[in-house]
Length: 373
Image (tube, rainbow, N blue to C red; front, side, top):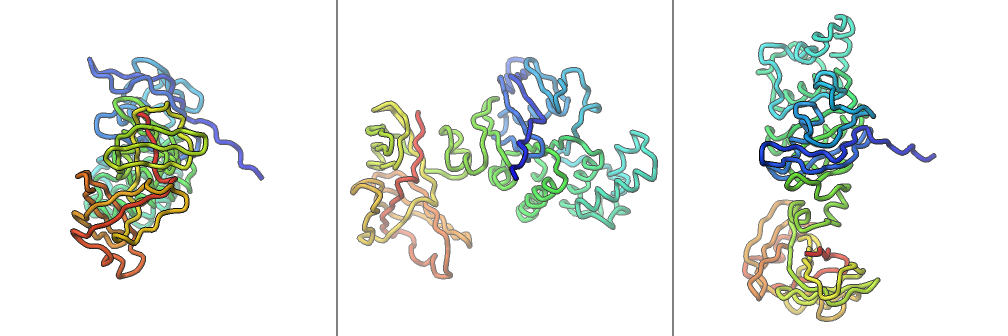
């Protein structure tokens, strides 16, 4: 049976926000679907937090409209909106127990004590804090304090949960754990999560869709895999993960193939058309894990790539062993650097190559992404 199509719960329509001469958000339009985990991703100052604060009602648009569940939020104050926000600092009260922190919003709403107790217990169990209701915040770990902040928002049963850099205060290992927990929690409660982050790995691991922001605009809106594999611009390609970027010229563009000439990389064959004007200035993007590396004289070419294409020579300048993968920085013979990532499938893989080795780099015809300049 086909699943019903999800409808937008948030509609951002041509929204602009200015602070004096600075335009923080510039004519942004996007829909966020009911029940999805949506991430606003971008560098500092790109406008993502301002957009989140407008959803919460802490800032108002200078132009455009924001609708939540079909209702225009223009005259709806923050405390009346069907949203709750988890702040970067968590903002839990140090003088209150875990249970009192979680119950705070319900107490303000004068919900009866029996219902408060039931809902607090339910929320604490959702975030794996059952049995810790009597503890004080200074008796909790960073991850537990973050869960208290989540429970305090979830207990209000909002239609949308807004999270502002929710994992930035955690160490790397705990951050990875909480990424999985947040994703599982969102799936369990089924409400819409809208998260702001500057961390690409965090966004890719949690989101259903990501809006990449740059200079107040949405540079690309897509699923994590489409953002990574099919970036729409040099900015997105460079911001999402690591990428090798080379300037070139499009010399062949047919429905089933294209060829670019990159002065620093040679002839690049692409096994599909790119719909760019002939002789156009372009950029070729190749992810490090899509670059093969071979000892000199051992590469025999690829059946899908014409001879003399998608190949370059160089020398390993540095390598970083990270356990599951090894990262190599290869200086090409023309002086440009190219990054290569190789999985360590066996315990001796990392010994195949070492510093100063001469290597041949090569890549499949589907690996390059052509970006119009």
